[in-house]
Length: 453
Image (cartoon, rainbow, N blue to C red):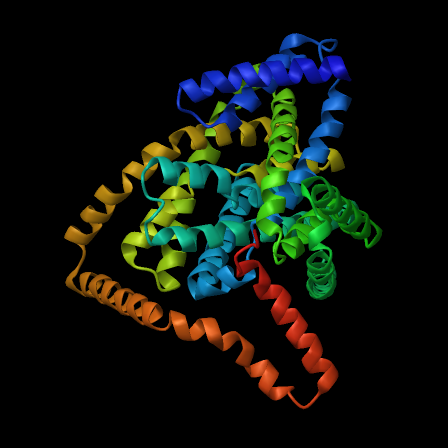
């Protein structure tokens, strides 16, 4: 195992340095490193694929745990209907489009469903990196786009659970799926509410004893505990890791845990992407190039259209809507996780995996260049729009500007309003319930307070 780890890390390190020099995302470097050390190029004896697979599965848990740590319910609610309508439009639109493309291409129902799920998720890491390099990190659309990306991650976890159930039963039953979604929703709600009531309180009381070492050990222990709980409940281990990340995101130590987890996440995430690359046969890319081109075009066009429409319908300006849509034009990390799940269950065509990975490489490479065309496309649209559409665009700009002014004026009032919520007023005469509600609100808001030095 030490030999395998040495080969993986030194190859990934050298290739990632090359990709940084070429100003490309290091994720692509990890995938290329996997191709170089994989059995298709280097033979079966250089690296043991089973060891890499095991480390990659651990990497998935750490990545999802850290994504959960980035989840802030309050910030999500602040994004309002833009995030929720935007993500609903993108996910539903891309699921329908992806499934349709899969069926037209000759895939059966199972493969078409997995393909659709892979195509509806953008990459949070790549979007944020591209936005930062483009100098747009302070732009108004970024908060809404970030909220959409996090909601996409949540939906991806739900889709993984649903697809696992469909794959194991080898059938699609609408009633069974509704029941599964209902059970999943109730289970998540119970885990989240109980977690918010218990874990932040414990961490707050033990805070004086939590140095970096004990904190990271406790966080990982809680993560693994929730992983086992999810598996015992019949759900995926990834769901458990993600939920515990969401719970710990509402504690005073969330940012500290996130910082401590970052090196560990980076190491195992690199191993996961290397394991993705090891499954690619370079020769098959020549064979499947029409499929790769088709998937890349579907993702780029679909994300631009559905991302723009979703944000526009959600109340964003046309410019912000287009900036969001044009930044979502790549296949994300969750697509690899879903593809790996399909391979593990043995239900997807072997050709889909290299097509998805290659299309991800293409779309990731093109993302910064596509983003640069957004403003010229917006100017072209505005200058050629009908008077009615131009009037709607102008009216929306004015409406959003007024909302920002009101939000700025009312920020001080909102800071003191949380203790006087409607729920507390309704339940103020029930002592036990009031105590629980107060504890929940306290734990939900404590992570917004400045950390004690």
